[in-house]
Length: 124
Image (cartoon, rainbow, N blue to C red; front, side, top):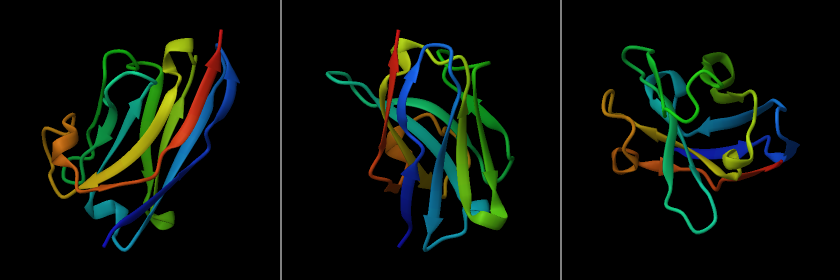
């Protein structure tokens, strides 16, 4: 069974950069599509970014496009989310998730395994 452990969250200021990590165990990150989602207080979980195992094409939510980058290090079995130009509205718990699906990765229902989340707080 795939297990995911996120790390790298913290208290940041608007404009800062941050990198989240998600270590994959019980599976091989390069053969899984990986996604990042986030959930702010009082809001539903929303898609942030994903990368397909088949195409290696990354997709992003409009709200983070141009600021966030998802990438993987297969040697470390880890996927990352690089976040630049952080905004107050990026404040949320960030979750990584995996799926064997290669397409339609913006939908949480497509994912099989989830991490426990890491808190990112951005002060304005």
